Image (cartoon, rainbow, N blue to C red; front, side, top):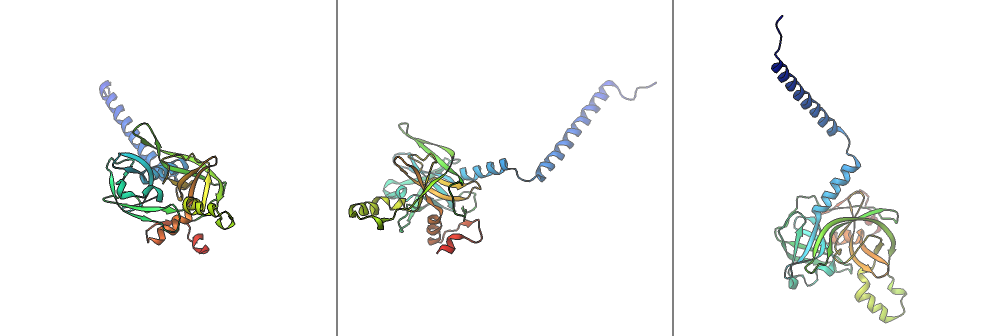
Length: 268
């Protein structure tokens, strides 16, 4: 009786069939996972990647040190604190993203003149492949989970920044009511030093020097505030989203809002 296949031929046939089987199985699995709804893990990875690309370092070009953070808004625009961008032209500020070694020189500074610690800077040639920033459109409460995303400053003689996300929540709302103060000296101090703290949230996020201008997001990756200071013996504070909303709107800057019925519009 003749053998249908030699040993070598049988081995080759087995290998070919195995390869075809693996390829077919892989194709089926890939299609299967493509059709699955996005998992929470995948969602948060996507959010974190977006936050990383949106986070910018503020660079003092003369000293070549990273001094604070900024948030990419749209086109060549970034949002940060007023105290970060004061005297910007004398200091020759620049902007740098975490995945790009190029430093973009600040071209223009637009400061919020309503008393909040906010400003928008424009940078020559800056453009990230990201949609415009999205605000949450929903008031925060103390049980809401929030994250701070940015580059944390560590002084080592020359200074450096490492990107990171920190998690926490709100401790309390801070509202300074200057009208209840009888001491004129305290009122003057408020007008000069504390106005930037008005209408902010106290948080247990690990805010420290160099975190100024960092973005504060909710768990869905929507902007809910901007870090701006640390109060001794209390904790860090961040500017409420309503101030960001009003400031960007006053400049006619494009941004998205998650909720159709935006509650800030109703309060005006």
